[in-house]
Amino acid sequence: MSDENPTPAEIAVAEAKAKALTAAKVEADATNAARSGKGMRVLVGSTRGRNTQVIQYEAFDEKQPTTLPASLSEFMDLSKVQDEPTIVRYLVEGYNADSLANASDPSAEFVDKSWPEDVQKQFKIVVKNYANATGVSIEDAVALIKPGIVASQKK
Image 1 (cartoon, rainbow, N blue to C red):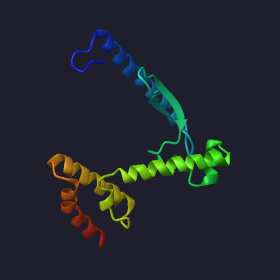
Image 2 (cartoon, rainbow, N blue to C red):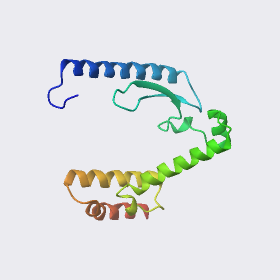
Image 3 (cartoon, helix red, strand yellow):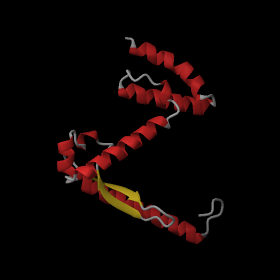
Image 4 (cartoon, helix red, strand yellow):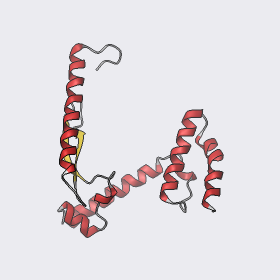
């Protein structure tokens, strides 16, 4: 779609995609409402490429921690994946994605790993938001914010 002056055809395509996405989310929400306990949920996404399509797929919903498996055997039962090489591939891919996310986080080097996980996340968010809102560097934002976090963790 052109940025400034979309054509009527481009507008129609965008509206159709938005309508399909909304319908898919409503359908997924209804399916998920009928599910309880640990296990897969229906998620909504889109295909890759130029002419994307709305898709639904079964996956673990990381936004609902109570639905996630807590052990390897539970993962194997819920996912029906029993093949060890496949599980190892999943572990490697997940580990690599987590490592990339941590390494690419500009405030990660300033986080004290002894802080509780929720404090670490909040610190990163506050530093990022403060730096963006004020136009200061990450380092300057950390210099202002970290002493308060350190003091609160000594209590």
